[in-house]
Length: 164
Image (tube, rainbow, N blue to C red):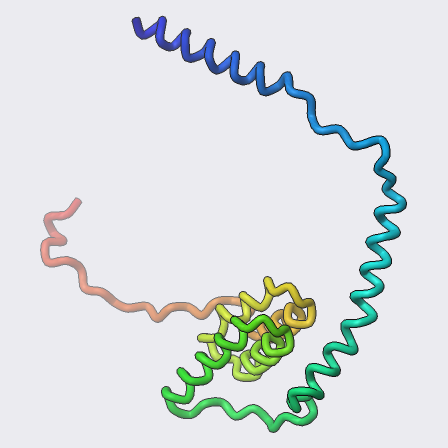
């Protein structure tokens, strides 16, 4: 009975695999011309690259938070200030504005605290390339060998003589 069940399962598997392999793959349309598609992509990329610097300048000038206008970053002193800063940085990263995300990553990089590492890792996966570059430079100081954990001398269990 077991041999019959195994043979039936093998037969069903062979039929399923054979039916999946017989389907023709999707073929490209003969009317699709790659040169026209590439030309459209280049034109769209040119439009995006031309408008990006103007938008960044307008964003910085409109908010009054240009990089030259900022006072030097002062790290938080108390734990309440630290929690407040972390909350503000997370809220800025949650906003849809790339300028706010960029500013949050820059502040997190200047702070350099280990608690902003998740924020910087999230910045590495951002859609805006300026945010990704800022996150990469900010996270650079955290790269390298990990700190060894302090070796804690634990006393052996009470019944260590009975253990084998």
